[in-house]
Length: 89
Figure 1 (cartoon, helix red, strand yellow):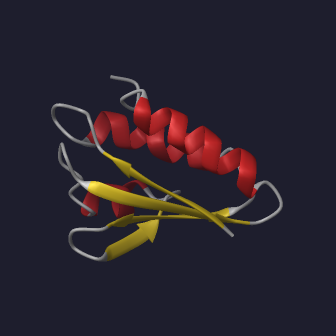
Figure 2 (cartoon, rainbow, N blue to C red):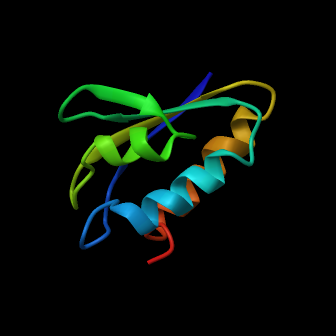
C-alpha cells in the first residue's frame, strides 16, 4: 500500500469539473484508490464522483490518497501529479 499527503491548491477547490478529472484518472488503475479529507477524517473511493465531491475539498484542504494493488506506485504518482497541477484547471 502506498500513500501521499497533499494540499488542494485549486482556487475553488475540487468541485464538479476537477472532481471528474480526479475520478477519471483514478479509474485508469486497477488498484483500489481512496481519498481522505484529513480535516474531516472522511474518506471515499476515488473512483466515485459523488464520493469525491462529498468530501468538500476546498482550497487548502489537506488530503491523503492511498492506493493498494498491482499498479499502486504508478497510481499514486499519477494522482499526485494531477492534484499538484490543479486537476485540469
